[in-house]
Length: 262
Image (tube, rainbow, N blue to C red; front, side):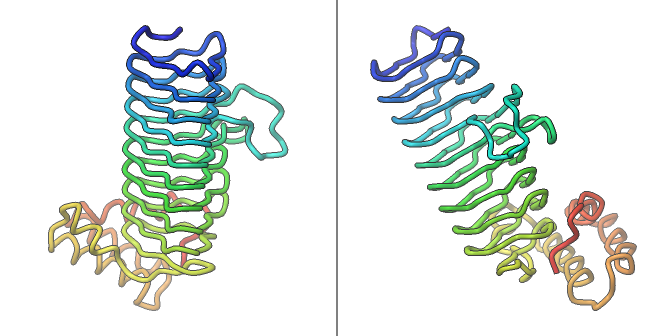
């Protein structure tokens, strides 16, 4: 079904069964598969492929040579009707690839709202991306990676399968992330190690001085005290009880499956 207000270049191919919402604009030489839904106001500039069971929300801007919902690169994949779900107001720049999920994972690759995926970003199968994240050029996520809100992944950085990147994290360019990165942390290197708290990013997002001080104290306990995680967890929990902004930092310990960067 194609809404009558949609504008589609005659060179593009829209398979029967696709749902094209109001005010969608599809430029030249695009291909839209039969199980695709594109929400109101989304723009595909040109030469975009959207395939598989894929739902794209409203007001997204998708640039040329992007591939969304295509067969993933997991050799176990056998054609199952797994999915891609993309939210609203994302900017997906040239040559980005976003692959469908697997039945061995969550069956769906998810991207939230208001994200910027720069040139040649790769989002592998079963990844979950939150809101207002930035992926710089050539950032690469292996399968099953989770990236929380407001995270920034630097250019030429690769994240290992099953890793979790916490909220407000900044990972520097040309890094290799092989373990989980707690919220608020700056990470850099191959393999990535912690380099303090993302103070400037937190200031821009309205964190108070008191909150920043509490987060920094929690960070110091984890990374500068010379003690084990089990030894410092009670003290970090106590800080979190006084300062709610520290709670995601403490909760992350239970979420981590690959161990924390050190």
